[in-house]
Image (cartoon, rainbow, N blue to C red; front, side, top):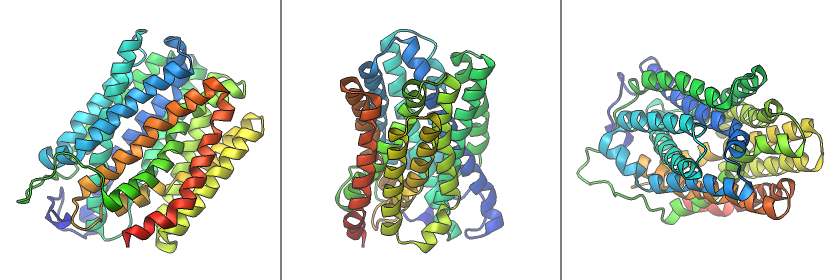
Length: 394
């Protein structure tokens, strides 16, 4: 099904005024997803403490979330085609927030694993749904919008992390912080969902129930995975690194993730302009090099300021990799946008699945500082592989 066949929430395609409410709604949903992930990332040290976890046990919990995400991503494209963006966003968003609230309401490891599985699956379906709608919007608007949409995700992550840092300093317990996050995010997602498109597959060809990545989508997914290893490691380990390895308090630790998210937001706010001027290959090469440089700074200079600055450079470096690759996946000839995004995402999320637990295993064997050098390595590999992968899309 082509983008022009999809039902719009507003009037005429291509009209800026008509598309503005729809654009605003998708921006809000990206902010909601980022806010949820930011709230989670800032509370990883609290989860580790409450459940009495070592790095290996925490890695297994992170693996459960990533496993739920990958399993859901294989069918997410078909779910969007069958039920529509609005329904998928509503169900996935509410479940995501419920799982987020629940992670600090228990002390049983089995409950944590179940909630992490739900959190991963729900956030993955939410992610594919809003990216599909964003690619639909980009086609209707006839201009680049995906980096700007992903900037809202990063702004949400920064807001969630900064809010956690402030609430930590105010003495509010971590479970109350997560509950407060949900109270803010759920009304936003309900408001925005009503203004999104009702994409559904009305074509004669039934969508494949599972979005298996093949051919060019597989190669694009592998490149996405290299980026997501680094990005996922920042979500799950940056706050703990600043707090544990640089000997700071919880509030300062939360600033590690906030610095990363703020830089990603800045990079993505200008990303659509950069995409208009640079080739995808040049952009991805520069992105990988900058991310590797930032990680090296954070790991070699033993000071909190260096960690924060380094994580900002990592954020700037990774900012536009996923928007570029998701936009390309949505435009592969003969593949529905939701299926293209889901196929690439399913491979990309292997980075989230393998990356953070790998960091945890390496940290237990050596140290968290040593383990995070793997992030720099994956960033270098991403830069090196960019030309070979993107040449397959031509």
